[in-house]
Image (cartoon, rainbow, N blue to C red; front, side, top):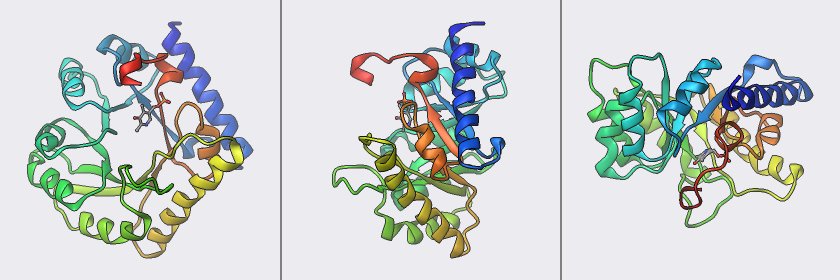
Length: 231
Ligand SMILES: *Cc1c(COP(=O)(O)O)cnc(C)c1O
């Protein structure tokens, strides 16, 4: 087994243990392997371990990898900030976008999604811990943005994602993740039929799963530490 295959097994075991501790079904949480800064060889090694869904933050780097690996049945998620001038690349190459937090970006993605592709699967990024400089829509604005996104023909709304600041301990991590879960439940009560709550990373996936995550985004625990300037 390669190191990457080994680490994927370890992450899957952590996920299974967290599901069991929370009384959740083991298949209720999916793993997104965050391959940013790592090359196509690393993605291939993860693919060999059965991994199919990959997350990328830097659009040009991602498009290069996606193009190189075109023959494989992989699912690519954009999890980085999106500038207006990058929406076309995202719409043409990715399967999912998890970082929609403005209607203008959503409208461009919808318009630019090539008609021969399935709609782009979308999560709205929510700023659950309230940092003023952070990406993500404020929770009170999430319903209106979600309803506007649902009306766009090139997109299919799937859920919410959040990236809270690292927490000091398990209980405080859960307290923040619970805000995202409460919002997710409220939007579903309002009739939205969301199935994806993307939260939890290498350091806090257990707390996220305890709090209702359905998709954890794991980078360093699978691929190793990233270069400082990209960390
Ligand atoms: C880099 C990144 C991750 C993965 O972080 P790790 O701590 O390496 O697991 C997850 N989500 C987002 C949005 C990221 O940018």
